[in-house]
Amino acid sequence: MVDVDLRKFHSKMNSRTMETDRIMKKKKGVIGSLILAMLLLSVLPSFAQKQKVWLDSDTGNEMDDLYAIVRLLKDPSVDVVGLSSAHFNNPDLLVFEKWNAYDTKDLNTLEDSQRLNELILETMNLSKIPHPKGGDRQIGRAWGGTEPRDSPAARQIIEIAKSLPDGEKLDILTLGALTNIASAIIIDPEILLKIRVFSLGAKYNQQSRAWSKNEFNIRNDLNAFDYMLDLQDLDFTVMPLETALPLKFDREETYEKTDDSIPIEKILADRWREQNPQDKTRVMWDLALVQAYLLPQHSKMMRVNSPPENKSFTVNIFSEIDKDALMEDFWTYLRK
Image (cartoon, rainbow, N blue to C red; front, top):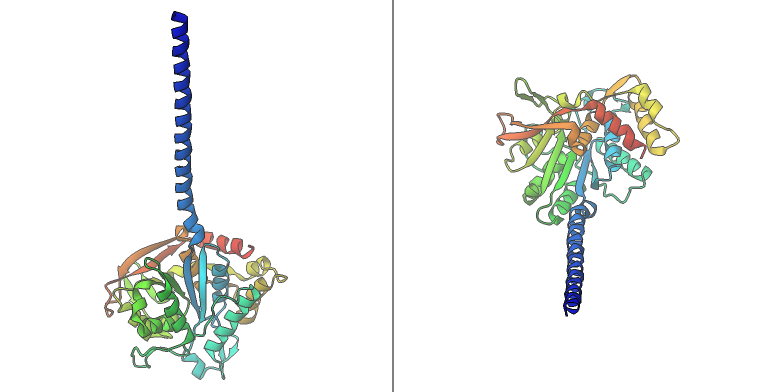
């Protein structure tokens, strides 16, 4: 009897053990599936949803715009949804015969920016990216005002911003005068809370905390800059010239690192050869803004008081960049 009872006992224990193992395996399978699902949920959005970026550039003005555009277009982490042309109208064009390598007679600054934008996109096989023309002059008049400069660029900025679902914003980077983005907001103020603007321009002394609007981009549309600084609800970040100044490229190093057998690299090198061959170094103003935006780990931001004459209380600025990291990053991405 004892042997029989023991056999029954062991049989029951074995059955319970097997059942326990089965339950544990099932639980482990469920837990594993949950963990995998959580990992997928955390990873997939980064693949499915990239930040949408619009770049507005006075590409015809100097040479650094081209480098900035190429760097942004080569970045896989963002979705470039537009590249618009900006004018670079300035008083020198009326009284001097030359502007950089251009003859000022009959120079249409907007058209030249548009021509270069189209050339870059075509060379990189990215002509599918919308590339509308911007406004051909400042908003308002010489004495002030906020009459918008309607343009295909302003209209497409509005269209894309309003098409975004709740919680998403369009990031707009501006490398020249603020005409196009200011016009878009004036035409349709509803986009104000659907955009974030990052602009190169103005000067800001971090020691004295003093602003100066005596700067090329701002002077080309002071009305637009003042209008945007009067918008208290605008998410606005400025890169003052002092912050961009350290990012300088060497001419001979640039020629050496660009490969003329690669069309887009030849365009970049030729731009230096044609526009500024006498300069041994050049400040890459526009590239500094694009890279500071793309690489927050290599830049610093701070919130400062707006100019006292404007209605917004504070504005963001890029206060510092790691020039060596940005330079290394550019050459790394150019080769991709």
